[in-house]
Image 1: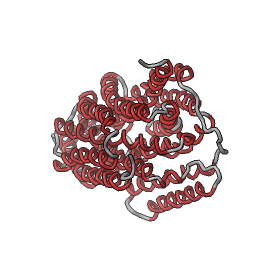
Image 2: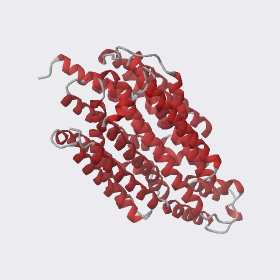
Image 3: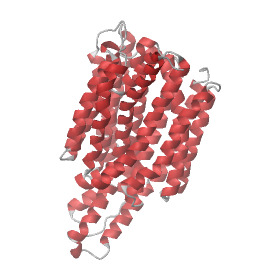
Image 4: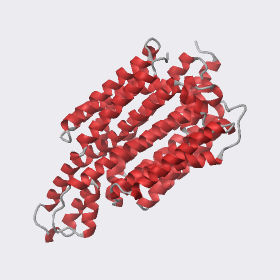
Amino acid sequence: MLGQHDRRRWWALAVLMLPVLLVSIDNTVLNFALPAISTATLPTGVQLLWMVDIYPLVLAGLLVAMGSLGDRIGRRRLLLIGSAGFGVVSVFAAFSPSIEGLIIARAALGFFGAMLMPSTLSLLRSTFVDRDQRRLAIAIWATGFAAGSALGPVVGGILLEHFAWGSVFLLAVPVLLPLLVLAPILVTESRDPHPGRIDFLSIALSLGTMLPIVYGIKSIAEHGVSWLSLAPIVLGLGLGVWFVRRQVRVPNPMLDMGLFRRGAFSGAVGVNLLSVTALVGCLFFISQHLQLVLGLSPLSAGLVLVPGLAAMIVAGLLIVPIARRVRPSRVVPAALLVSVAGFASIALRGGQIDAFWIGVAFVLLGIGIGAAETVSNELIVATAPADKAGAASAVSETAYELGAVLGTAVLGTILTVSYRAAVLLPEGLTTAERLAAGETLGGAVAVAEQLPAGVAEQLPAGVAEQLLDSARHAFDSGVGLTAWIGVALVLGAAVVALVALRRAR
């Protein structure tokens, strides 16, 4: 029988799941809205990558700062501020008139989104003191993230089949309203009892580390390797070194670097970073392959991935009793090897894979990553001091979001470069049509759809089919290589877990 205090804890957990669902739904819905956005706004390949990446980029750059801010001003207060701002900006994003406006709105969503995730995980740390209860609560937290990912494609697919692409952003409103009403009632405020001053220079350095590095990667995608593309990466790395040195020297650092001396903490962060990079990169090309190559509707494409996302939920819950008895250095690598099998099944087929085998591969990915990340997240929270829960949780979320950035920036860039090099454009297209079709698969599909109503009578018969066939083969030519990189990343995560978590219990 649960006492009143215990019931309140679990009701608080239910409320804290709402922003988790929101962020995960937002990420998945956007992947499935990419073809519609590409067709409607005709972005360049780099603009499309920026539209995807700017949200996790700003999010990752500010997570540590926001986690530290939550420790100072109150984690619940920061959660409410972020929720209100996220809801308002979501409405602006839904009615954005251009790709440039959407990129700006996504950046603002990243700013407010950075207030949400560290607050939820750190509030769990203060709400559930008992470690067994906390392990189950974190498993439910991770499960909610997967559940949102599963719900996103289905709900988003329904919206995209009946409404414009902007409707997917309006999903934030009904999710956030209950949070704003119930969180002040059910969630207890918590903060660091001895906070230091807000370090604005460290905040600037954390952003200055992330932005130039990702800009440099995107510049390489557009212009190739040159000093102009390598210089921002070098600048970002230099600012990153300055950030670390400052955290070591100042009396009250924004991020306690001593946390990384704990093998369980740093190893778990590394597992999250590598596995999420692989997973998000996989979603980037799978969502486009299902819709633009295989021709599935957004709803049908979303349903293909639902079994894998459901497997992620089940694996996250079933791993809890196993993790009580088996060392993390064994259970995490074993789980990740299941994900390796999923990536390998895609890589071995190259781009020639149908919806059924994509669904099977995604089930394997879901089982491995769902189980591994439940254990790694619990280790991150459990090994950090209670008064630094916000900053520690922010590091965990930074690994997630940095992985999301690298997944689309690196793997997406490889896919974009491969597409540009392989696509063959038929003669007779206008300059604007050649530019759009040569940038992305979505652009090629949009151009092919417009040809019958435009200049088709001036072109040879079947030119639209010729363009689509070339574009789809060009896109799939990079899928095999991208999947093999996913294999390498998850194998790397398994090795990190095997070595860094060997003393964790």
